Image 1 (cartoon, rainbow, N blue to C red):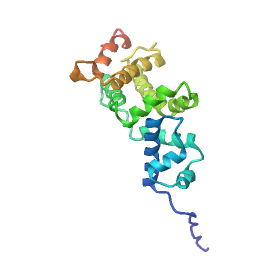
Image 2: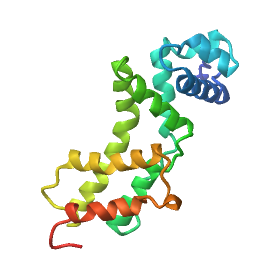
Image 3: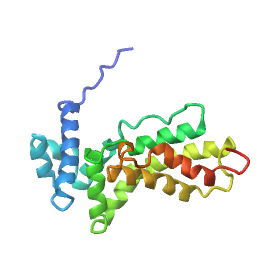
Image 4: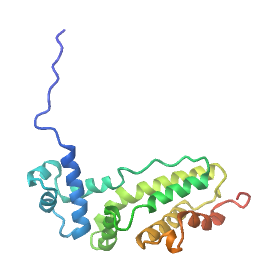
Length: 202
């Protein structure tokens, strides 16, 4: 029986370098100019590629921005496994807080907060691609805490996630640091621990 020759895909393979340049340019443009001035042409110019290169990859600016948003958490670390529930929770929350206020991710999120009311679909997209993955990771750790008896079994999961993530965003956005005598991630967890843990556990 004759061996079939593999069919080669037509056209040049996509360049990962170009893909990365387009994603970065899209995020920087959005952070600098907002959604109203965000366009395929402007992204192409900032990335140093042709408009055709961008249009070969994306059908429109929403699809382009959504793809770029996914890269914000591409290097998100694994859920920690330190053996101690409270230490795991602290490390996970520190990962949410750790990016500096001037980082590209923080600048993008600030722009989303400022423009979300005018562009509801943008707000929904960021919630789906950026916020919910963080919520899912925290929810997973909290469920482990309930199963191990470290947390109250009647815990309001969604309210607890909001209470935990809120201070991390607050500390990050306001540039509050331990050196300035402000709260640390560990001290926030310690302050909430009494309300989260069952009365029979420390």
